[in-house]
Amino acid sequence: MSTERKYVFSWNTIGDNMAVARPSLGVYTRIEVYRLLQYTLRDILEDEFGHIKTDEIFRRAGALAGKEFYKKYITDVSDISGLVKIIEDKFMELGIGIFRVESIDLDTLSFTLNVEEDLDCSGLPDSNEQICVYDEGFIQGILESYTGTKFKVREIDCWCTGARTCRFNANAIDQAHGD
Amino acid sequence: MKMDLFVDCDMQISTVHKVLHHVEKLLDAPTPPEVPSAFIKNEDFIRLHEKMISLRDIMTSFASGDLSPQITMSGVVAGSCKALQANLRHMTWKVQQVENGDYSQRMDFMGDFSSSFNSMVVQLANTIDALQQKEASLQEEARQRNEAMRQLEQSEAKFKYMAQHDPLTGVFNRRFFFFSAMEQMERCFAMRRNCCYCLLDVDHFKKFNDTYGHVEGDWALKHIVEQAQKSLRRADIMGRYGGEEFIFFFSDADMEQGRAAAERIRVAVESAPCQLQDGRKIPVTVSMGVAGLLAKKVADQNSNILQQHAIKIADAALYQAKGNGRNTVHVAEIVSIT
Image 1 (cartoon, rainbow over the protein chains, first blue to last red):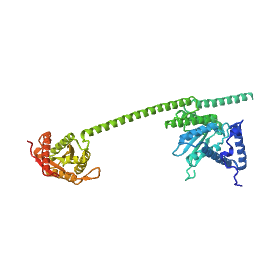
Image 2 (image 1 turned 90 degrees about the horizontal axis):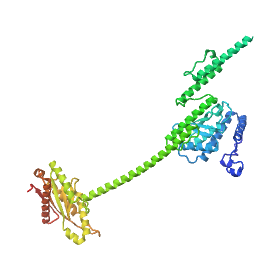
Image 3 (image 1 turned 60 degrees about the vertical axis):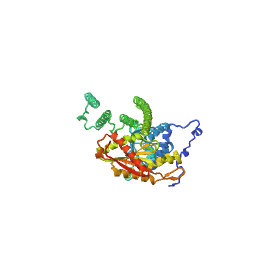
Image 4 (image 1 turned 135 degrees about the horizontal axis):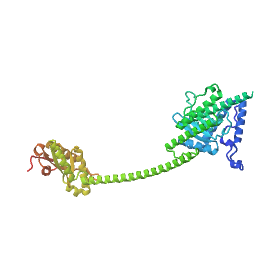
């Protein structure tokens, strides 16, 4: 397989002057369009690589997005409370979801976080599958950027499993033990 | 055949009633009912029973403030429980942030609770702000009061110093010397120790003033005081008696020790010529008269009278020292007061 890169991510790649680019339609699109992209892409990736590999790809993409999100929006943060506030505001403003903290333990670097009205899954039919792997990566990317420590983020409740909210456990990885 | 249908139908209705009755008990009874024996092998019934037991436990935990149960079921009711659990935990976290001093926290869910929480935080922030302003104002008031107190104490100390010291040389003035020396003398006699009074007069000081001027004369007096003080012990006292005369009290000193103390001062002054402002060095000397007070002979006398008498004797001894050619020490003993 060729390792030649064509689209290394940068914010320039996705354009920024929407007033010029979409003077009539503006910056927003309908959520089904976003999901159409995500779930068709997922369809093809699963077909090509299987669902485990696809989850891994989505998680990696999410982590990259989380890091880029952190770099772009979280430029001046003094403490964890400030970080949470910025994420709450930005998630709301960008329509990603309603971000809420259930608990944070800074000694062990373990977090329980919620995203309500999640962009990826809210309203999807019950499937008994935690589907928000992209969100897992996204949160991982933010937390790793903030703490400088590797994190493992897993969704513990999802709209798709009947919960009305998506809940995530995030724990710093003990690198000495690899988990 | 018709009868059989009726019997089947009755049995089904009876079964439905039993299920509904069990569900009702699961919802209402204080302790959960056992699975009826008729359904013990019915998997659907057991699943429903366990689900409702789980929900009962979850709701009981929530009602008692325990938000820790892990909800593993799915479905709308379980989902709502999870949402409630998540919301309550999030509210707890918000309250903890407020507790840590972050009054920017706001909520936008859980209806009336959110608006009450938001109002409370705003009120709290305003109250704390007002208290902080008040505290700052009180601190400023306290600071000003402390500063005023410090200045007052400084003035008091300054006035006290001025009341006790000679403004030119910095040694005790005559009045405070008498007071301090009296105390020290009484302390010596209380311990049956001897002591001495001593007078010092700068030799030919009038001529010095006439030759070099009064400014240099003042400078010479300060220079002499500096030399004398280097020779004193901690318990000794020095004061300005008047003009170019200084007075000393030597604690715990008999006549020979008094002489030695005076001699040290005389030598110190003699060996350190006074340097004028133009750089010239002018030799100065002093004459000294010492009056020795022997405790065993005079301790019972009135202190006031004794002090006056001692100074008188020291003055006579000084006169004798001057008569002996100046730059010398003369000692006299006080045996009794006549």
